[in-house]
Length: 185
Image 1: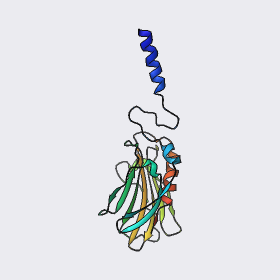
Image 2: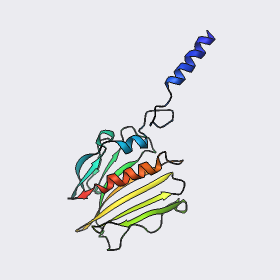
Image 3: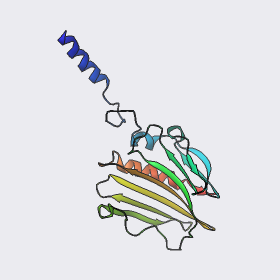
Image 4: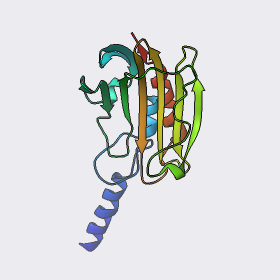
């Protein structure tokens, strides 16, 4: 009887092995950074405050967006999410951009000493791309902002974990690809 129980335990353990591309943890299913990065993008039209925008998103992998018209943002989280899966936000800010604005020059917040501004670039339309990341690759926030008549509209992707993120470079590339599709209309 013990041999049967042991064989069943081993077989059950094998059956529960993680599939390739899946995050290897116990608990509910979650989307891996790789799965999200290769998901098909579809167009989405929405509003950030009073301003319409378009963006291409992995709609099939995302929940219905949270829309806060008063604060001027639309946010998406993944359907199969945990606290360390990325979120995507498009937000209107009523502060005009200066001609040389490329985002914050220094990280700020409690863990600022552990972070670096990895990229800070001007875009052809006067906007910018800004990447703030932890040195241990356990956090990043990527912002792509475009100037509009009375402020700016920004796409942000943020992800945080207590350990280095699996597929860090791939998920940052995904964030850039998605945010660069965002346009104020």
